[in-house]
Amino acid sequence: MKTPLSIQLYSLRNLPSLEEILDTVKSAGYQNVELIGSHLDDAARVKQALAQRGLNVSSAHVSIAALRDRFDAIMAACKTLGFTQLFMPSVPPDERQSPEPYWTFLGRELAQMAWRARDHGVALGYHNHHWELNVQPDGRTALDCLFAGAGNSPLTWQADVAWLVRGGADPVALMQRYKDRIVSVHAKDLAPANTKLDEDGWEDVGHGVLDWRNSLAAASVASGAKWFVAEHDKPSDPARFARNSFAFLNSL
Image 1 (cartoon, rainbow, N blue to C red):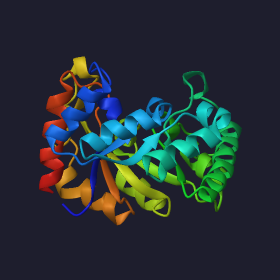
Image 2 (image 1 turned 180 degrees about the vertical axis):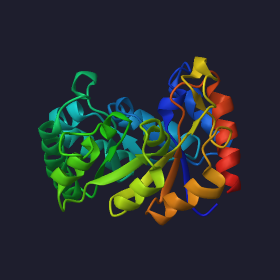
Image 3 (image 1 turned 90 degrees about the vertical axis):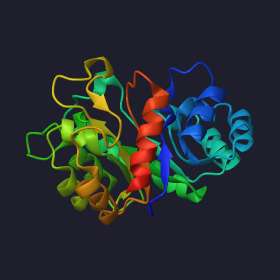
């Protein structure tokens, strides 16, 4: 497969240690990982654990609170770990149903952070869920408002395709609309309706109802995605998810 693969380590968060998480993804075939914010708080230890397994960092997720409170420390962690792409993955739960002014302001705030990050050689982007597809009174979605607020800034986008589908969007059309921002996609999958309820309805990539092989993979690349990052929000068996998803994505 020409598009590089990575895996979001949030998917393996229930394993007992960082070392077991990294051993699991390495055994599954991955050479790259996407970190979560807590990994940046102990960058030297994480760097050593990655190096011992020959793993590299493709990107990381970091909260808006951390970006506001510890921006310089986060930039330093990126340098220590040797990667250049951050994504802000989610807004706090009590803010997810906010009206248009909130999302426009958030876009402006992230834009300012993206300019600052660029001065450190780091790109900052946004990662969606489904609540950003809530329609505002003017007919735009929250995601539209956020990107409008970001203007011509270097803010990027990691499109979480399965969350777009859950939110009722056409992921291909939406990725094309914002292809100038897309640099990465979360490759994940949905189980058939009313199945895999213990896994919140998610499925290993390529084993669910989303057409990654014939449509979504090519559409993602055509929209600018340079990374496919496998993710499952609640796998009952993280090692199974990692193996199955790598085998499928690597076959494309």
